[in-house]
Length: 479
Image (cartoon, rainbow, N blue to C red):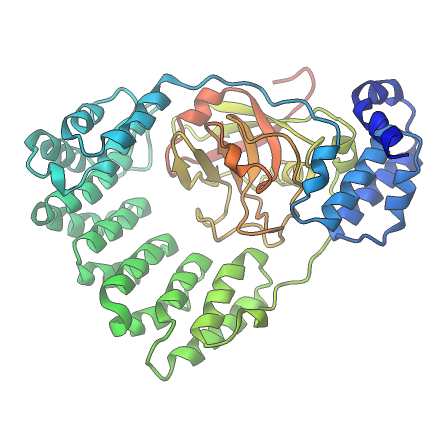
């Protein structure tokens, strides 16, 4: 019996083509029930048994896959399913090789000096990030860093394609703090008041390198919670519990990232009011009913001296999103991701992989159609690794209030594939990540829901903080 089933599964592509027009509305309803059973992790749902008995190969495979995902969080049995089409193959960009080679040259000041003038800004910024005190006597390097800082405009929110805005000055400031601390103190104090919040965030990092606790205390009260997070982390390492009053005040922040940082800093505090403040903040965050704030809630519990098992996450809701059934059955849906003109403009096209992750793909599609991603940023950019964004707080700890379930498959994390950000099993927060290189170590850990089929060069050129103007569905025959 098993050999017959496997033979049928291997024949899926041909069988699917032959059966494409045979499904009824009742069959589609069954597919929806199977998807919901998997999403709820409900092995007792009768839709699974009905699906396994169905004459259509596609429905049997969906039922088998659902049962496997329910039974095994890592879904090791997925390898017994038919192979899915491989993603588009994208050759590496020339700059990626230069970027990658820098790691082995981090002690070579001459190579880093050359890289500071590379034609691609990703390589230049990488060189700045690798600099340390061993290059302090290299005057051309120091002069380049000073020049980048001096060139920072007051209004640094716009950049041209292939250019930078605040990035060069921010990276140079942190590098200068490592190489020439005395020369970095004045620009750090100045940039700590810059109108661009990313500049202030990097100023906090520079202040930490300079052991400048006064600047860090100021930035720990910043209006932007990403700046607060960076400042609190640096201040905690330098001053320990000396500044617990600052950390207690930060527990009232609206951003989960700042609250989490403050809670981590308060853990083990000798102050009598620290635990009570952390407990009160935990109750406030429970009331928010926000699943991705789990990290902040757990950190608050630890600061309050309470076990993580006391966390009270919001109830899980499982609803069938529009188009999930169609995506599961092979519908070709594509999204155009357009960058803001202030971020260099351009666009790339993503084909949703409903054959791998139909529920996730359908939920992303629904969010895109509702304008959820419009105006959000790519907050994490690691050239030659990945870019990540699409969170309302420009931070990995703030996402959609409801988690997405994992939908692990066999499609590999190669260059150009698009996956869902998570911080643990079944914790998708609607943030995207795009693999800029083959990242096969992510296989089996993160769900893929799409692949770039056009414009990967635009994705390669994204810099930290670049903004998404829109994500729109492409209609057949229209661009």
